[in-house]
Length: 364
Image 1 (tube, one colour):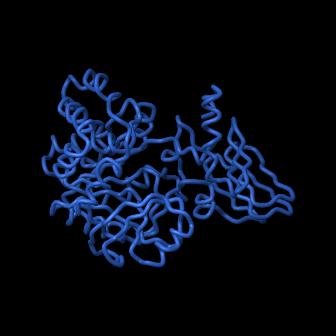
Image 2 (cartoon, helix red, strand yellow; image 1 turned 60 degrees about the vertical axis):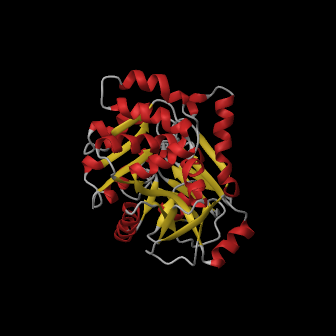
């Protein structure tokens, strides 16, 4: 398949603090059940779809060296470094513009660096169908067939009942719903989880971006023109910080869907967003005496007595013990320990905000 792949690798995974930090974010961690990191696992499942020469990683300055070390197969020129985080639209647009200059009219697919997928063959088939739609000029997404009324994800409203592997129009992007609304979405059969997987021709996407958000397109286009020249550093320094922070859904995909330009291919391939410790505990933990223990390269022993519903991440090299407790998340790292009610897993990022606001950035 004549496909170029983009992997945005950014963020700090604040809901996985203190395991994930700004300097060592979750996509660099081996949270896959193997020794491969999330980033490496993403590369592995994309290998059948695109050669390493057609894989592009967009990452920050702080992570570029680690990305290159973990993915030596990817050419250095394909590791696109953004000096400041400007949200997903700038990162994806930069990759699209660079690819368009190197290979005009290419079909490009964008996949996050920190997701897990169990059925890689079904994933590949779904991507291939989306690529066919993209070649015809559609802005394609890959939607995930929902398995529960999830309130932590956005949704895609489809034109009809979702049928796996079959292209259909996206009517609207929906924000994260409350439980009652999510239940209605699930029962209707016409809604998919939005996993931020996109496939399109680079020229089509850039045309839509130029029309809808020239404040993003114009500086990105100028940067891309200079990217493979000696002027890159100066142009990036002058323009990158001027790009507005905006998600690609808001900038392009939502208004394009309203104009009937977006389609999706529903997929069911064991997709998971490793967004919090609840998910990590469900997917990768071993059950031991009332606790779900997540193994890491630095994992140490866990002892639980009269405990239930505990998720333990022993990554500090010390024994972790619990006695008579229920429904807790316990994360041990060399310089920080988290103890959290499992019902508050989504709120862990508030701790990182407090640490940052009080000047204790060495822990974030």
